[in-house]
Length: 171
Image (cartoon, rainbow, N blue to C red; front, side, top):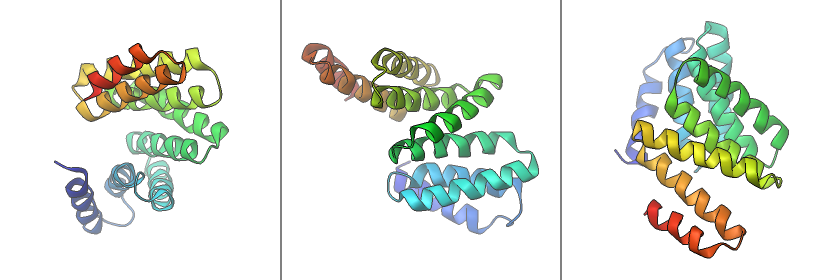
């Protein structure tokens, strides 16, 4: 399913869910994930609403997804402190509940964050972990993003042969 169709289906599902429900929290978090590349402010609003509902209803999975979203969003806004806080809180739930796809998403987010403030080794370790987790769960989109990130990391290091290898694997 393409991203546009997935987003439209989630919007329809959201319209059909009760305003004050755990199901709405999950749908909001999933919709925010599909929205953030297109509309950061809307994705942040959806994520905040999802987190509030998840906390109200004790629905930890939706809360972890909302925190994953907020960690990514704050990273895009160069708010590293809040980005790391949300990503690490989400990682705790994903790890405790053996959610491999969630762990992959967080590793990729952490890879970008650490890389962005100069901790290249830690960024590389997290990006490589993301590749491993995405490969385990067969998540091709995330796998491609993680390989592309590694290509960018090696490009920044001026290791063009390694960079090209990762970019080619991502295709």
